Amino acid sequence: MTSKVVSCQECGRGKYGDQLEILTETDSCKNCAKGRFSDVDGYGHDATQTVEVACKSCMPGKWSATLGATSESVCTNCKAGQYSSTKAATAITECQPCQSGKFLDYVGASKPDECKDCDLHESQNQAGSAFCLPCMPGKSQPSRGQNQCIECSENLYSSTGKSCDACPQGRTSTVGSSVCKICEAGMRKVEDPSNG
Image (cartoon, rainbow, N blue to C red; front, side, top):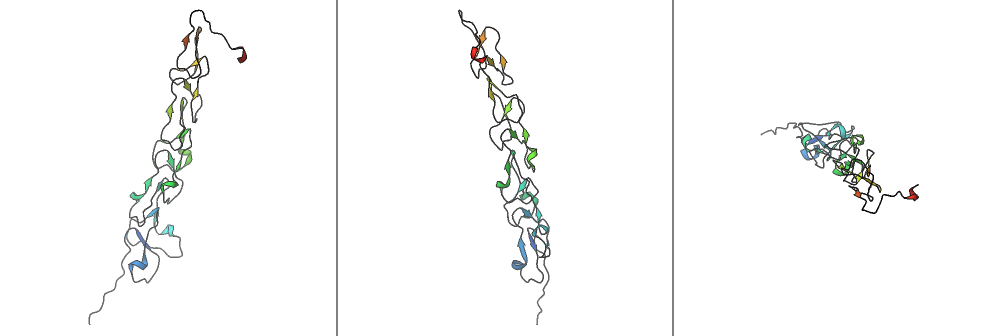
């Protein structure tokens, strides 16, 4: 009579075991949950411990929707303009956008304070952006962290989008102008008495 050889076999990568004396791999080896991975064979833990002990977590700033992941490479970075403080995040929706007026120019950020304010003379009206836009001629933004540039007032102009400057004597402009126009012959620049 031939005797059957029985041996204990390790759970493969991407799986973990949490029970003793189980006879089949299906019953004893479980897939690592989404947002987690196991890059070694034979990963196990006591069933009374939390699953966090069983498989390693994707770090904050990363996420994974893969069950039974076998390496950290399945953890995907949050895009530029987004961050996630969540450990073992399971979906891209856990990556939060930076607010408008801010930007983040690299991937895998884990904290909201990594979002930077748009600089002077720049703005960004979209949340979750990787960059800010310079103000167009005729506009300016004298403050940081703003979501829009401001049109230059009447009799002011901006040819570069950097600052709104007063029109020289004998010239005038309308709101949002990038140049000042010369007052035509027979006309002169007059201050509006209502702006008193």
